[in-house]
Image 1 (cartoon, one colour):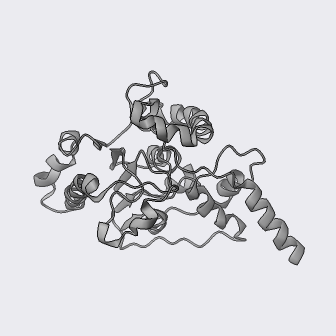
Image 2 (cartoon, one colour; image 1 turned 180 degrees about the horizontal axis):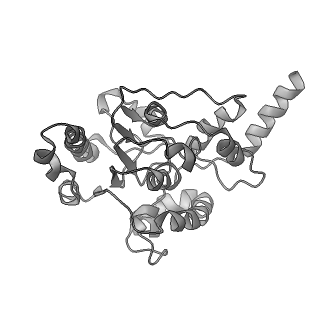
Image 3 (spheres, one colour; image 1 turned 90 degrees about the vertical axis):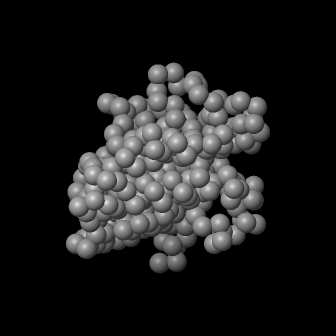
Length: 278
């Protein structure tokens, strides 16, 4: 099962993960939100559900491939613990729609092995998509900055190879394809604009450090939205390694300067309006 963006939620739901309304509402109803990404807004639409959907697990699904998935608020640790299938996840560090830390890195640390994390340093939300299906007017707006077709072609080629090798791990040809599930293979596709990393596990205590760093980093991005984009071409912190986070694996913290949305008031207004009508 392969899912991109919100399709990543669908893939994990079919793999056995159950929606955690408690976890979602706790985030969406926070009276003191820092920032809300477009992915957060999308997920918080489910906070008004009265009941948790029934188990959506499909026994025909034996592997999942998640491309820039929207999953950071819909699932909690208990939800992801129900996924026992091999998982391949793609994240882009310049993804302003689904920020890498909250939507991919943290959920990845909670998934069971075997699992693989393919990181595109500089990759955006639609970098992996077929250019023929993209609306280039939208992708070049001030809200969604996507890379050119020429820049992202190496990523699409890499995803084809890694995905095939991943799928083949459940066949008698598994060993033959194992060399294509290595860090060296992923890095061989790197260019000046995009660097690629492939990991099957992250450092010890990494999840704890991610949670500690994610909040101030999101605050920083929210306060330097325009400035960050301008400085990125002049060697800004989030574009260079190493950076201000010192010993933390900085590749995991290149959070995009997209358009954070203070959406808590939107949700409150919407719910107030609903209650008045009722």
